[in-house]
Amino acid sequence: MSSEPNLDTGTDTDPDSADAPTGVPAGTDAPTGTRFVFMDTEATGLDHRRHELTEVAWVVRFEDGREEQRRYFPTHTTDGADDDALELTHYDERIAPQDKTPSKVWLTEFLEHADGAVLVGAVPDFDARHLDLACQKLGVEPTWDHHLLDVETLALPLIAPGPESPRSLAKTCAALGIPHDKDQAHGALYDALQAMRVFDRVWELVADLRSSGDPLPPPVPRVQPQPDDATTRSDGETSIDGVANDDATAHAVEASEATGPGRPGDVSA
Image (cartoon, rainbow, N blue to C red; front, side, top):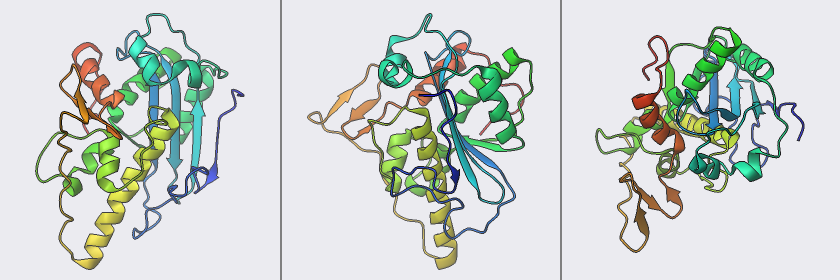
């Protein structure tokens, strides 16, 4: 594959999916006046200080509703890489064969697209920390808004019976009726698109509720697995066929909060 970015202009950001997002969510006013960048990154591990980015992808939704998508495989090494991270991202099959792009190219374009934008993703502070460090190494300043929007948190009032910790991207999609392909998960472009689908679905539901005056939909409980169809991970999480709670970014944030540097300024979601 060429080191040129994969891109799609217009609103059909995923030609392989019949359920591809179509710009501004149905039932909402357009344009919003806010630029959103739905993004995701993959890395060689969880430690921001020593692990490196292997894949970066984003979909920018401009103020007028136009969308463009990009995917890059940054120049990197696998020195000190976490074997689990490489396996989770299917590194040998998906990433290793790709042409790599220096940060001066991909980061420059990202900063242009993200100028004044709100970054949206599944646990986006994990990705933003990597992007901050990339900016520091290149000697440039971040251009995005200091507010970050986590779609796993955004969706909670519509799917949870009460206050609870955010669910993984896979479980959030399942609760909202969004198909989630576990074989494509943990690919940066796919996860960025899934974050956009969650974002759009939430606002579609809110628009419907506002127009109809109906009560909130019934909550969707977290799946309570039986011993025959689930396994318990060493970290206490449960993995269920079809809706595996192995969201890498969620676990990455827990680790990086304990060991990695925080993002400068107020970045609370």
